[in-house]
Image (cartoon, rainbow, N blue to C red):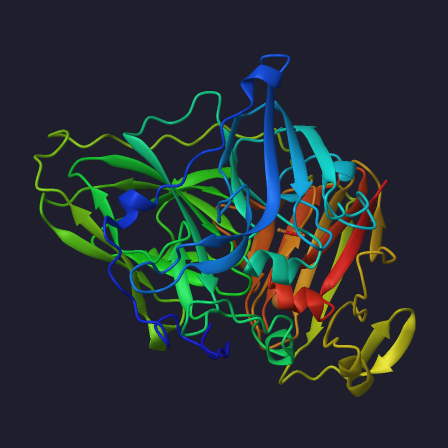
Length: 485
Ligand code: C2O
Ligand code: CU
């Protein structure tokens, strides 16, 4: 990730400070299901209102920040359901612009996917739209708007949807870190330079302040001997994180919600690109009273401590640590048949951006040179097409039930976390190197000038977006549609 240029380091401008009470005080409320209106026992009903509000991001002498939030919280209320539940969510739009909610990573019907032009008409100011679907997979998922996405997410509209396993793993407790970054002015207001040309053409809107669960992180309190399940989600517009837990060996048990054979990540670094989630098991093996740092080392020359792990002085909760971590039960995903001679093999080429060599691309059905594209604020293309809106012709049309292998090539000098709606795919290889655990994922990180090979069974009919989750890159055209029928 060395050659990924970015302007602002997390420590710039606003210095890290101590938030009294640390993480303990920042645990946000879970939305309580509206039990009275839930008819069947397996129907879980929630209400969310997208609205303007304020958030205490910095606290202390700083003023609250004007944000957009869900039902008064940023990140939004944690929606917690169980695998197989039917979920009904009433979404009211209290903003002065249209919105929708996309349920990122959930394999649900296309008309519930929240994509304008494809799934539904945007929810107009003052209107309510009810989403309803059955959650097929357990795991850590999230929700966010899919209209004016880069601005709406940056202003605080994002939240986590946790689907619990029917028999969850044995841990002492579960924690959630929603990792985000904000681009704030010195008076803690949000910098309103959304859709800045520099951000579109380079690495996206990088913030200058990193938060966990909406606050400046300070201390993560643990007790010796504990086993913690920690759900990590990167909801930032553009920033990547590469976390290393000093003095600990967290094991990855799920990626993008889906179980993976428990393992220590390569180089001990947990990579979280925008949109990605990782579930880990953290065994608190150190002595009472000790302290460690969780480092973000995604940019080696700008490493910083994200948060401190502080052990209480209490005696260990157990003398003998819990044993080997059991893998989670598989989600009901269709296994791609790579031996099938009829499997589809497709090439996807990502091109453009600053310092790129793209000469031009199709835009609204017409070939434009790069200079003409830039006049339309487009600078990225997938297979030679720069997207205008989500109303676009499919890049590929595949048969329902078919196995599809996508060889994706990144001809740009930036990393791109490519996200597919409505499906999970197996990551077969990155830069030609076979992936050890062949994880299921909904977002795959393409290294700068690198490649990835993914495979999935197209078992969900509809027009599904395939786009970069660096949201300013979408603004700049990096979006495509895959039709399953
Ligand atoms: Cu979380 Cu279309 O994205
Ligand atoms: Cu991108």
